[in-house]
Length: 239
Image (cartoon, rainbow, N blue to C red):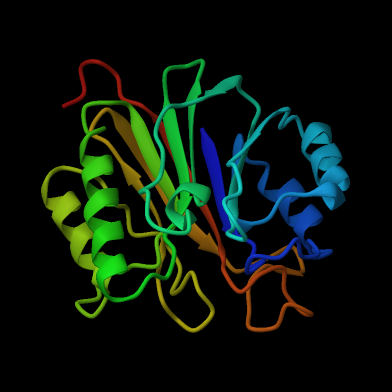
């Protein structure tokens, strides 16, 4: 399963989807598309038509809470909404920025974006999120998106939680590529339970003449690279 996760940088607005998005999506040809920092609305008819034309006919979007961003998941394989909900904090950002689906193959996927909380709210969010992830450790599930955290950066608040999850057995593959956010940080990740395998992960910055990621939305699709990962169910004999 080729999973493409992409922060579109809409910053709580039903913003324009940049011209380069369509050729990039066609070239990358994902089985599952996960959009975060996305806002749904009446202008998204062309997007949904594009998804249908690419065979991504099963589409779900998280419920918007207040003026917060949403997560959209579009897939070739039939999928149903799952029961997992984001951390419930004041304002609803944690819930609005998380979406859980079950695929007919048995794989589960959670798309998310970790809001940029501060102080006590940040601690509460990460305590709740890591507990939620931990509660699914025995399931064939992957968590993917902009986590606003780097497990290899000791200054990253959320990175400490990711490191703890990794020590407990979660796989967090280090994607190929120097950065996922244009300022040089690596904050977009996929977390895979022990029931799944992840055979590749990479940050896509440019593609067939399309500037996928960079500082200017006029010249790039987003300020985040696209994260492309390949995941699958492990064979029963695999450790």
